[in-house]
Amino acid sequence: MDTSRNKYAMRLLWSLLAALLLGSVARAQTPNSCLDCHSALDPPYKVTGEQFSQDIHAQKGLTCASCHGGDPSKDDQDAMSKQAGFRGKIARKDVPALCGRCHSDGAYMRQYNPSLRTDQFAQYLTSVHGKLRAKGDEKVAVCTDCHGVHDLRPANDTRSKVHPLNIAQTCARCHADAVYMKGYSIPTDQFAGYSASVHHEALTVRGDLSAPTCTTCHGNHGAAPPGVSTVQNVCSTCHVFQAQLFESSPHKAAFESASLPGCVTCHSNHRIAHPTDAMLGTGAQSICTNCHTEGDAGYQAATQIAQQLDRLDTSVKGANEILDRAESAGMEVSDAQLEQDQARDSLTKSRVAIHSANPARVQQDVDAGLQIATKTHQEGASALKERDYRRKGLAWSLLAIVAVVIGLRLYVRQIERRPS
Ligand code: HEC
Ligand code: HEC
Ligand code: HEC
Ligand code: HEC
Ligand code: HEC
Ligand code: HEC
Ligand code: HEC
Ligand code: HEC
Ligand code: HEC
Picture (cartoon, rainbow, N blue to C red):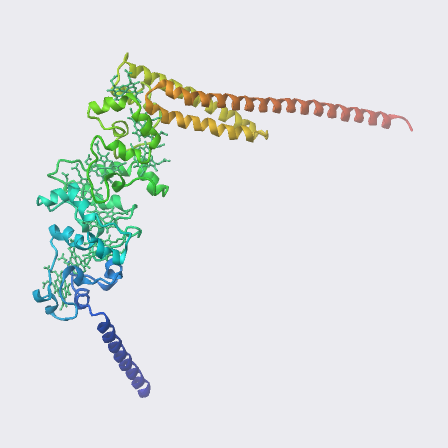
């Protein structure tokens, strides 16, 4: 009983000694008194080793002193003395210059990562955030609002605040907060709108990283509202064909002279929905009738284009339906089904062509689609005819078989009735 207790005490002593030894070796290698004290402090002074080890700066060998100054080898308050170059807390207004000190220095950054851009600070100064900050505004975004601090990760890390899937939330912290944004003249519905948009759906639901988030349209560091003349450039980086057609449309010059931005006048900027054919024509959901009235050329074009699309849509649907029926009846229509894909393509193209606001231009794609849909419809119809023909044939042969069976029965009975 006694000996085992002694053994236990000895083991405890040894492990304590070992821990002390190992601890002091580790400390001699990377003295960081800052972390030793600060991991034990309460917020906002708390910075733990676990947290800081996630930080890209720590991973690249930088320390607390790289940003705050001070002497991490002193383990008392001398660590934070003026003599040791300690700068203390970095005020919000000084953050961009602090980060920019390294990140604008091409020669310095190249030592670590030659492919990293070094224009973030310069760009930031041109943004609405940077300009207002220069005038003494303390509420606009500074580097740490978007990137975080002390566990700052590169953008391609999914946990980074600036990863494409997290960006909207990062901007929303201010831009969707009506109380925080009180006193500014801009709305606070961008995040709500964006969250309900086709772009948000494509990015988050379908995981399509080519769909835009806030910074795709506004720039990472030069965040500014696109001016009337540049909105369309934003959209056209991705929607090339719609932009080309809009360029050649009568709306290009008309919108410009009315100071209306291109695409977003019809689609909105943040709450972009799936467009429908009902946006054309003159019905309740038409957008053309927002500006055009009965009798003018735009109104006529709207009516005409809606009819063209309706005709092709009906024709494609009709062909779809008859081919599906033929297929489920077991007829071979795979070639026609393949052709039908082209008819559906033409319908899609026609919906792009509407951006010309020119019925003659839309007609080109509509005609191509109608031609194919008429053909595939015929192929579906003749497949069904063939089926009917085969059914009739089958019916006749069944009838013949039944007749033979009945005949045989009668014959057998006759034989049976004969007296033997
Ligand atoms: C002996 C413990 C100890 C050491 C070592 C230490 N700190 Fe501190 N530090 C504190 C305490 C406690 C505070 C809280 C406020 C105060 O007393 O100034 C603080 C405050 C700070 C602040 C906020 C100052 C302000 O004005 O709000 C920063 C930044 C800071 N320390 C960074 C560092 C850095 C960098 C190092 C290493 C070079 C370091 N500290 C080393 C204990 C320590
Ligand atoms: C890449 C630069 C950078 C590094 C490295 C860094 N900090 Fe900071 N730290 C900042 C900035 C910037 C702020 C101001 C916070 C803000 O803008 O929200 C700050 C704030 C602080 C504060 C003050 C919190 C407050 O609200 O009063 C403390 C304490 C602090 N840092 C300690 C540390 C310690 C300890 C380390 C090392 C483990 C460290 N920092 C590493 C940039 C850095
Ligand atoms: C003492 C110099 C220094 C300071 C000050 C500094 N950084 Fe860095 N930063 C670096 C280095 C070095 C790297 C690593 C680059 C690499 O290897 O990819 C880095 C990396 C980064 C990255 C990741 C880049 C990537 O995608 O690979 C971001 C983001 C970043 N820093 C933001 C900031 C912010 C925000 C601040 C201010 C709070 C800041 N940095 C302050 C030197 C610094
Ligand atoms: C309004 C939000 C915002 C602010 C403010 C901001 N950044 Fe960024 N930063 C981003 C986004 C978004 C990315 C890019 C993410 C990506 O590549 O998808 C980025 C990327 C970076 C990178 C990686 C290299 C690059 O350019 O792609 C560095 C380094 C960086 N920022 C430093 C800074 C510095 C330094 C400041 C302050 C002068 C700053 N950022 C201010 C949002 C911001
Ligand atoms: C720390 C809070 C904060 C964060 C985070 C923030 N912003 Fe801002 N932003 C502001 C404030 C405040 C203004 C000034 C409002 C004004 O322009 O009157 C502003 C202005 C803007 C403007 C100019 C609006 C105008 O028409 O004047 C744009 C665009 C913008 N921010 C985009 C973004 C984007 C994109 C993000 C995320 C990548 C972001 N902001 C993150 C606070 C923030
Ligand atoms: C598809 C591109 C696109 C995306 C994505 C986008 N914006 Fe915008 N944003 C615009 C356009 C275009 C304008 C200018 C509106 C105009 O002139 O009619 C604008 C205007 C703004 C403004 C100025 C004030 C206003 O509402 O007019 C702010 C602030 C803003 N956006 C923030 C954001 C934030 C935050 C996000 C992400 C949640 C975001 N934007 C996503 C294109 C976009
Ligand atoms: C970074 C590329 C990118 C930018 C910039 C962009 N979009 Fe998109 N857009 C997409 C992607 C990806 C989709 C999803 C495509 C899909 O649904 O198959 C999409 C979908 C759409 C749709 C719905 C299409 C449909 O068939 O339902 C409309 C309308 C649209 N965008 C309009 C705009 C407008 C207007 C702008 C400018 C304010 C814009 N987009 C900027 C990439 C972009
Ligand atoms: C005059 C109003 C108007 C303008 C300006 C406009 N659109 Fe459209 N857009 C529409 C209508 C209406 C539809 C719906 C067509 C349909 O589904 O029948 C549509 C459909 C779309 C679609 C999805 C359908 C498709 O396949 O094309 C995208 C993407 C699109 N527009 C992008 C843009 C872009 C980018 C711009 C700017 C270059 C733009 N639009 C300018 C009215 C407009
Ligand atoms: C934001 C207002 C606005 C919307 C929405 C709009 N237009 Fe226009 N449109 C104009 C203006 C302004 C003109 C040039 C003045 C004029 O001829 O009426 C114009 C001109 C036209 C023209 C040329 C007319 C001519 O005289 O040769 C056609 C065609 C046209 N629009 C069709 C459409 C169609 C189709 C839609 C719906 C998809 C539509 N517009 C939506 C404002 C608009």
